[in-house]
Amino acid sequence: MAFPQWFPPLVRRASDWVDLQLSLLVEDLRRVAPLAHGKLLDVGCGDKPFEEIFLPFVSEYVGVEHEASFGLTDASQRGKGPDVVYDGYTLPFEDGSFDTVLNVQVLEHTPHPQRLIDEMARVMRSGGTLIMTAPFSFRLHEQPHDYFRYTPYGLRSMVEKAGLEFVEVSAHGGLFSVMAHKINVFLAFRIARVTSVAQQIGKHSHEGSTRESPRYWTFPVVGPSLVALTAGARLLDRWAPDPTEALSHLILARKA
Ligand SMILES: C[S@@+](CC[C@H](N)C(=O)[O-])C[C@H]1O[C@@H](n2cnc3c(N)ncnc32)[C@H](O)[C@@H]1O
Image (cartoon, rainbow, N blue to C red):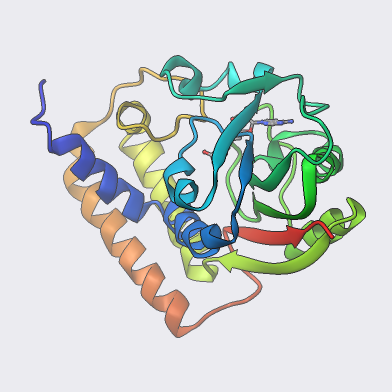
């Protein structure tokens, strides 16, 4: 079926809004983007979904990916991707080559997370900024390459071990966002089976490609449920914040 041109962007905006994990992450990346400067390296960039947010603040945006794991993702089939690929161990750049290092939802996918942070610290110039996010409460994904979840204290300890100065850590969502996100994922992916539709509009590109057919007949129930759960979670998290729950955290660190 051929959709009118305006339809996919509209579906994409609606699905980004109900995707609490992504929309809260993007809000926080927009907040910290003005701290990015100079030459930026996006480590584990996937199909560079956050390039537009950072481009106004940096002189160059370079994306690097772990060749083997990127090759398994839907993003690798769709054109936009990294500028450089590597073996996942030693970043192929000289010491002190970048002013900003961005690392978004990658740390859970390497069995050697401290080594990756050490490498990111190595390629940063002094005065450089690290902007890193990692999930705290998130379903298994990109299996079998899904190894860890992170607390804010774990993230702080790891960046300090790499010789960086801790600046701040922020949480994405609270108890109600965590609960709503989990139910939304169940409804969207297990009941309505929308993964292939999501990949056609550029989402879920870090998972393997799928051709599973959506269950269109569930949409009239699943769609309104997703909207109601998302709106309710956003309101309740404001009304009754719970600092012990979050979907992800963002940590900022600086190289002295
Ligand atoms: C959940 S995706 C996130 C992609 C992108 N940052 C985003 O937020 O859309 C995780 C990415 O980490 C990459 N990755 C896994 N291990 C890596 C490593 N050691 N170095 C760099 N990237 C890695 C995977 O190939 C995958 O594209």
